[in-house]
Each structure stands twice: as structure tokens, then as C-alpha cells.
View 1 (cartoon, rainbow, N blue to C red):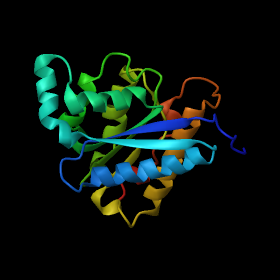
View 2 (tube, rainbow, N blue to C red):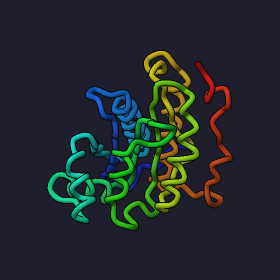
View 3 (cartoon, rainbow, N blue to C red):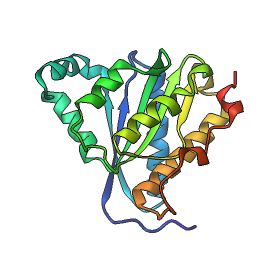
Length: 207
């Protein structure tokens, strides 16, 4: 299929990175996904604005927002970035077999309906591939509960994958194309079944 010439307006992609260190592998994966999505959308003739929300910068404000009941200052601006975006890339490190507390706290301060119908690409990082299934039993159900339109391909990267794993690069590109397609509103036959495009078992157990 030849991509269309686009809608003639700029598309905004919000990126949530929940890495705790600086620099972090979580931010590195987030940047790779953002760049691939930018390329995929530009093939449709779109102008693209990528806005990154680095959650570690809002850690104290997130705690305050839980106590006061509303975000303020720079955190409120970050929430607005996510609310206004045409699509969301959400990347978290995996701790204790699930998304990080910082990541979940940010999700908790979003108003109900913020992500409803919004195309979302989920991704995660961890020290070993043993944590990769957290994408399917933790992140995907979380965003399904929030009524987001999660693309079929989720992306996991272990520390050893960066710079050496061609399969990771292919998966990044595929997920980015799916997100771009979702932003463009390409017709689908029905709701996306996450089990129609599962991660190959050998990819989950690599390393």
C-alpha cells in the first residue's frame, strides 16, 4: 500500500519515559521508538512534533499530586502534553515483574478518559529477558483498562539487546509503523486481538 499524502496538519507524539537513572536504557528505547514513529508518520506526508515527558523530573510533584488530588506546575504541563497528543509511546523499566511505581503514579494522575481511543505503543526495559512477559500481563491490561488503543506489537529490550540485536531494531520499526497506521486511522476489521500478533517465544527467552 502506498501511504497517503497525510492530513495536512502536524501530528504530536507524546513519549513517557520512566527511567530512574540518567542516562537510562528506558530513555534510549523511548528515543528509538520516537525516531522510528517520526519516520513512519513522515512517510504519510505528516509534520511531526515529538514531546518527551521524563518522569524522573516529576517524581516529587507526582507524590504531591497524590496528596492534593491534582497536578500542578510542570507536572500539569506534562499531563497536558499527554492529553493533547495524537499518539503516546509509553516506556517503563520492569521492577518486580511489573511496571515501575513512578510510571504507575503518573498514570494514576491522568484524568479519566485522557487515553480513551488514543493510539498507544507500550514498551519496557529490564536487565534480562525473563521480564519480557510483563508487557502482556501488566502493561497491556493497564492501558486496555484505560480504554486506550494499544497497537499489537509491544517492544521489550534487555540491557544486552542495545546495539547488538537486529531483532530489536525490526520490532521497533514494526511497532512504529503500527502506531503511525493507527494515527492515520487505517480501517481495521474489528477490535485488535493482542493474541493475533504475539511475541515469538524464542524472542521472549533469548539470552
